[in-house]
Length: 223
Image 1 (cartoon, one colour):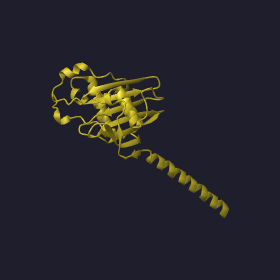
Image 2: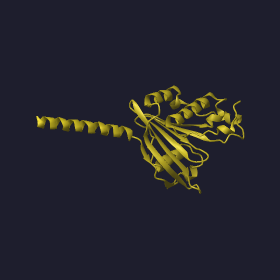
Image 3: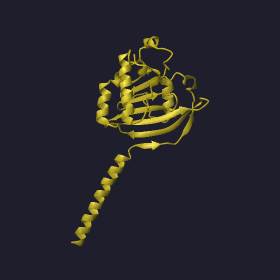
Image 4: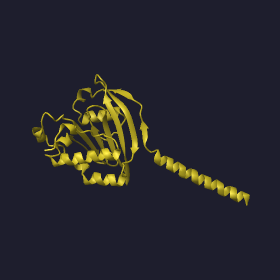
């Protein structure tokens, strides 16, 4: 009888430890790297002013972000936010089967502009409302299939517009595309696509509980 009781206690202890490890793995899935480091711009230095695909591809490599410009096994969306003042942010939305997660990196530039400074990285971030609800909103807003912004919108701007772009990279198994939007918050009243992008980016702020998207709302009055 004592042997049987001891065995039962041993099995119960293993079961409890296994559940504890599962819980720890679930709650520790967000990996945070707050090591500040500077990375020197290299062959893309002549292109660093335009922030287009070649620049973003090289910058991603320098920042040790996953390469997505040649396609990915499942859908991956990367969004670049250029904020004034710093920090800038890049958010990766990674689909993994029926689930997924987000990756958030904050960064900036050195005073002389020759290096990118990485402030922190967070991997395995889950949206506040859960992946399923987040993915559904992503699909409803059509972020993966949005066209780029209309160049004609610049004619409707003014000196009040600070001209900040939000860059999108969308990768899947057989495709990669790039598009961008100029001040979606500013142009949301005159362009329906800008309005949808602005709506999604504000939603992303709430889901991350972090202001990665920082529109200059105090500069603009609603018409």
